[in-house]
Image (tube, rainbow, N blue to C red; front, side):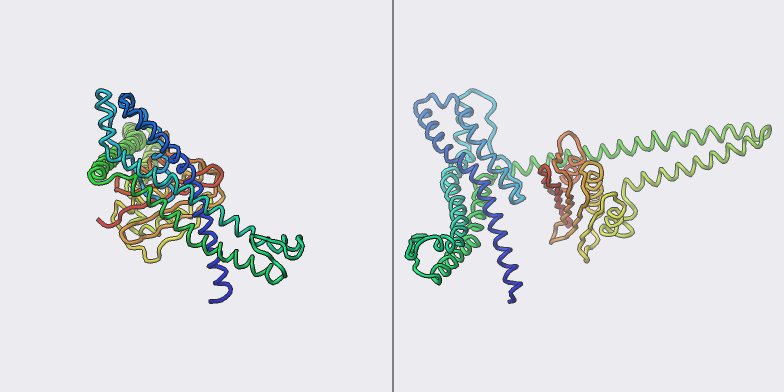
Length: 420
């Protein structure tokens, strides 16, 4: 392996360690909450043993569940896994009944287990990462310290008497810290995320019930999207094409009446009617393309998106699998419209100077990623185009991830199942 390859590997491992450290730092927030939540759990237990806490138990556990909810969101952002709340409903009935629901809910006890594990271990993991980074930084400055100190001084708990020792010691310490950062820190971050996913997600019947709920919501979303599409087509036909046809019919009627008495006027009306028919045909082509773009049938998804990207105001770089096969028509149409809507948002709202589109098929999943370097801050609330993307993807049992921190651009990642 050449020097360039060694350098690239080292840089990649340092970057991975930095990302893992950031993950652990994010986890330190929920770890601190879990640590204090353990004390809160002890207080709740004491009040329940006295009988008073049972009357307000659902309210007492709400802050603890809020900490677990924050961890679910963090794990979902870091991994792309969608983790929903698995709790049984305890909003109705007498207070003791609601308390019994909370106490018998397995998710309550899994939350408690997660707090007991994540509280101390999460804080210890981020402390380990900080100590390793600081130790490596300090080790590299040991020669400067020793140069400023008298010979025989103790530096980093070691007595240094000459320059070879002052150079070898920091290199050895830095190498040890780098090895630990490259192995221990990513491992700790990975296991921390897996712990949250394992304990805080729905299990068994909870998972099945959540899946049924998701399918119900996606079915409702699909019906809503289909109804909206039908309303749009009806509006285009009624307000556009029908109005033009009425105008053509009126002109033809006037031309028929004046054909004998005023042939020149009738000829002008016939020409206007002909132009009106041409306009109607153009509008019909637009409506047909909105139902299923013919370019998809002619050139496939990669060719259609390439044509779409080339017509954008913002420069777009397209990356598509060279061997992208033909996919089910519904998947290709959804992928095309997702890309079109995302690029439209880039042109209208992002103030971006460049965008990238990536379309990759991996196994039974088609992944579409649209990224820009704009202002960010995009949200799918309020019935925006992003909400339409999410509904269209959910209708095909796909997933949508939108990452748009303010000032750093927007990334939309969509995964669609492409084998039915």
